[in-house]
Amino acid sequence: MHKQDSRQGMHLLVIGVVMLILLVPLLATFLYSISTSWGATILPDALSLKWYVQLWSDPRFLMAFGRSVLLCMVSIIVSLLVILPLAFMMEYRYRQWRKIMDLVILLPFAMPPIVATAGLLQIYAGSPMMGTPWILVGCYFTIVLPFMYRSLVNNLRALNLHDLMDASSLLGASSFQAFMQVVLPNIRKGIASAWFIAFSLLFGEFVFANMLVGTRFETLQIYLFNMRQTSGHFTSAIVISYFVFILLFTLLANRFNKA
Image (cartoon, rainbow, N blue to C red; front, top):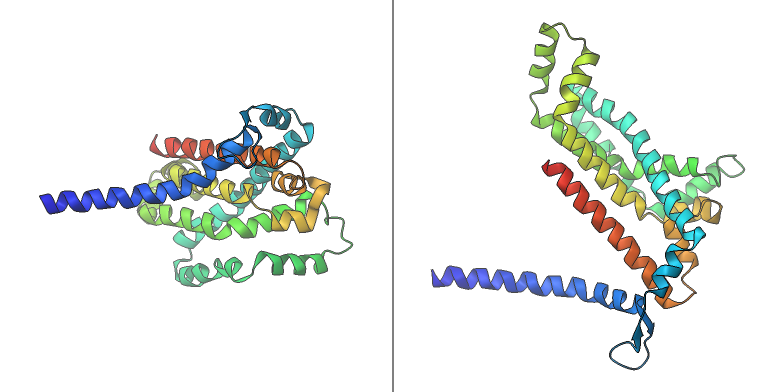
């Protein structure tokens, strides 16, 4: 019993040290974002929320934030419309191709973003799509493909998919009706998980957005990059605001999945 308590205490100690290592830089960034000036002293000279007031009253920041959210939402909706039927067909009709598909969806990992961007710049040079958010929608589709496909497929495999479809057919439902009214409600949490994972990934994407669109469609990450030469207090406020938004979004996702 004493040995078990020692191990539990050691585990808690390790977790506490790891959490401290992770939180110290974040707390230091937050403290810097609410300080008026911080020079050679251990603590800031004075505290103020003026950097946050300046940030959230900046129309350019609000527009960049809105563009990021809009771009992520459009990309995820397009991805779901393509990947969800694909995952369903692979699990229901073409199960013999599952192993090949499991390898194909890993291809985006084999191509570094900077290399893919260089290729896209060559392909779409002079195209009307270059510099527009529509080219980012296609790029973002490749980013979320592996994560979204795996999340959906895992939920479909947890169902007795063939029996559900056969039972629905015996009751007079078409394949489309069975998919919409039986399968979709049963994979609701899988769809939500895929949605939240994809949003978290895309909201922080920078390489594609910066090289393919840049300031012509300024997202939050590009805004942060462009503001890096301004006050460090201001950029720290941007980082903390970004972190708080992702944290709230994650908590919302966890609560939604437990519902």
